[in-house]
Length: 438
Image (cartoon, rainbow, N blue to C red; front, side, top):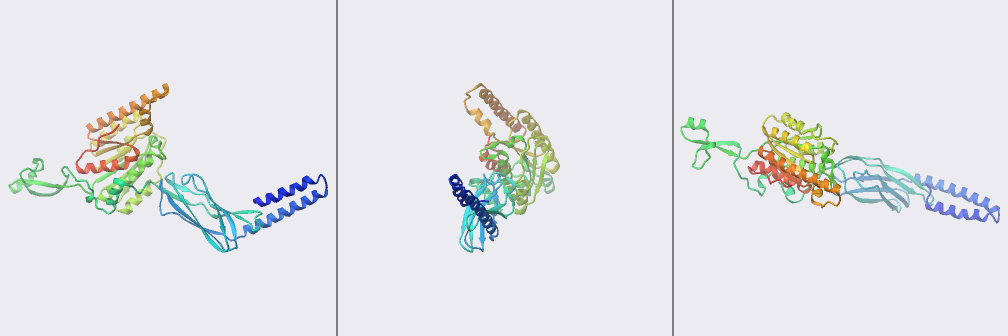
């Protein structure tokens, strides 16, 4: 590829062609100079192409959606001084655009190029190759080559959390959930031992067979439930594809699901993850321990929203299939359709007959904005009425589900993980979840 100096020389030679109107011999001189410049540029290109140049790239240990990570590229040469233009062909899911850097190596040396990436989308992305244009020693031509081939990189959901969510996850990582600064209230549900009845003990806790055997009142002493069964249903249907800022609702739901998995696995719960849309997409059983949680991240990091209606009935059937015993079923979804709300109500009430059901409804930012913005046109007025009707339907849905024993939490995207964890822990504290907000 010709360099800027080549075009400058050809421009000067063009002046001789203009002057050839006065002297025809100048035209032949100009043609000879053109050939000379072309031959020199070709020779310079061959020398640039033969220049030894190597590169190595170091990615951060973990690429996380929305979290900056530092990438280091090392370029080395054993030749003399040279100038090279590097281009990183990054995937749009990893960076907004390709990156370029002009480097100058003075003698045999190594140069480091460090840049920061903030991945935009979860999943596996194949980056383009690292290419270099090396300028010839006469600065007449560039020789382009591929230093590093394209590489597949994985971008994971949010891993690090601040605030209360980060505190819960830190305690979970150390397997010391008993240190959560929240006192447990209510009555335990897991049998622990038998002891003599004391005044004030609930009559419902009297163990009548042991009482008859010993001839005195004997009561059951119970403790907090451990090694429970948890099924997390992750909605990956059409409503979860809408954006809330730079991330989709599904991005927030996946991050909240994995945070819940980390806390539940630390408690010793048996966790099963079910991702669904119009069908069951993935089913993952999480074993206790860090390795099991790591497999959960590997199974869900690239799940994408499907442009289909959610099959809540199939999701409920999946819970019955994976857990025959009583379990806690947490459904993360976003209700924006009246027909879907009715199917959701029927499915959760049916699910609640055998399992403890918890609905975490991710609020839709567009509905919230339409309901709060004064309309300026008739079309906007109709849209506001529709959004208010949907919010009223969500309120009725929450009321009906609570009457059927289903806990309901409505949450904005930025509080989804925290409110999901609090609602889950409230199940085992014997307290009710926070009231739904509309």
